[in-house]
Image 1 (cartoon, helix red, strand yellow):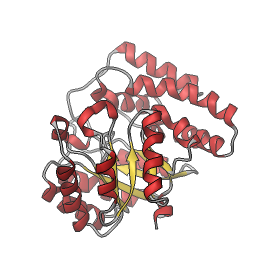
Image 2 (cartoon, helix red, strand yellow):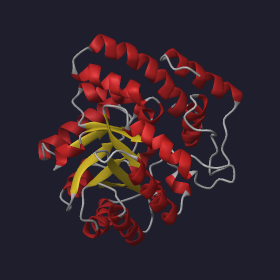
Image 3 (cartoon, one colour):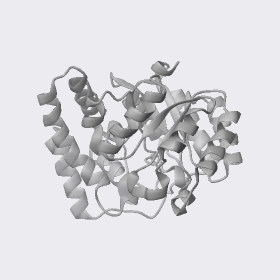
Length: 306
C-alpha cells in the first residue's frame, strides 16, 4: 500500500476573494492545472501554504471537497490536520478521510514550540491514528524550530502506531534529512520518507527520496517534475543547472524574514504568472516592491513568462 503514495505532491494555496472568503472557482482551476501536469502525483491540501492556521475546520473540509471534485480521479490527496486539541484533530481527520482525503498529514501544534515530550507527541498521534482508518504521515518540522523537531526515540515510537506509513521530512537541512532517512529505513524499509524543504529537493532526491510535498510544485510544477526526472535519470548536470535557478526562487520565498510571509510570496508568484487573479491573504500580510521584483526575476531566470 505504501508504494502507491510515492511521488511529487504539490502543496496548494487557497485563492481568496477580496472579502477574504474562499474563491471556489479559482481554487478549482488552481488545483486542476497542477494535477493535469504529467508527473504530479497529487496535492497536499490544508498545509502551511494553504493557510491552514487561519481556516476553520468547516472551511478546510469545504476546500478538500472542492479539490476532490476538481482534480483527476487518479490524483491522490494528502490533507493536513493542524489542531492543538487531539480529540478535535481526530474528529476532523476522520471527516477529511470521509470527504475524499487519501491520507492524512499530522502537523505538530504550534504550542509545541514551547516544549514537548515523547509521551505528549505519541499520545497526540495515537488518538488521531485510532480514529482514522486510512494512511497517515507524520511531519518532522524544521530543525530550526527547536522543540518542533522529533528525536529518533520519538520517531521510532510513532512508527509503531496504526496506519502511520511515512513522514514529511522537513528538517530543511541535508545532513539531518540523510541521518533521519537512514534511521527510518533501518527500522522499516517500506516506510516512506518524503522530502519537504523546497531548498533541498536536489540532494534529497539524489539520496532516493520516496517523494516530495512542496509548494514550489504548486508554482512551477513542470520545473519540479523536470528536476526530479533528471535526477532519477542520472542527468545530474542538467538537474544541477535547474536546481541552482530553482534554489534562488526557493530562497526568495522561504529564506527571507519573516518566514511567516512565505505564503504571501507564493501567492504573488502565482498572480504574476497569471495563475490566480489576486494574492489576497486571510491574515494582514503583504510583501514590499523589492521582494516582488526579486520574485519576478527568480521566475524569469527559470524561463517563466510574466
